[in-house]
Image (cartoon, rainbow, N blue to C red):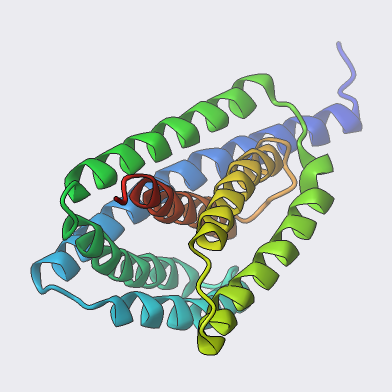
Length: 226
């Protein structure tokens, strides 16, 4: 009779647990996308102003803090849907802003298609190759710090009468690159068993997609501006 090695048993359990996290993450991600689409549609119907997006982002930060604390509790799942519903409502206000442009429909549609292709392409690559992208953590953290500094500058400079459209474009370009990196990084951590909580794994991927879409619209809007 074959002896069962304890390491083999643990390894098999680890693989099963990782597969469960992967399955639950993408199922929940799909559901949160539906919720966001519904609330975005509501925001578009009621013509929610841009302040709704700003309010959603601010309140979203608070909810992320709560989610992090409650990620292993029964409250985590309802909080995820509340969070993504809120962010979807804010997104609807942003989409309405672009739809108000002459070629707004094309901007939104193109940004959506690019976001979907980018996410599915990068995710599929990691899921099939199982390549470890954990080495990108330091670079992504440094990039986030640069993005934060740039964001502060974008808020402060106009107060002094300084307007730099090119800085807005550079900022959106940086965010797009960072989100592509984050998709690789987060998916790699899910596939390789680093992320063991599918709630937070879902939130991470959701935010990557959300920010990628927002800033692709920004870039396309800038490029089509006469």
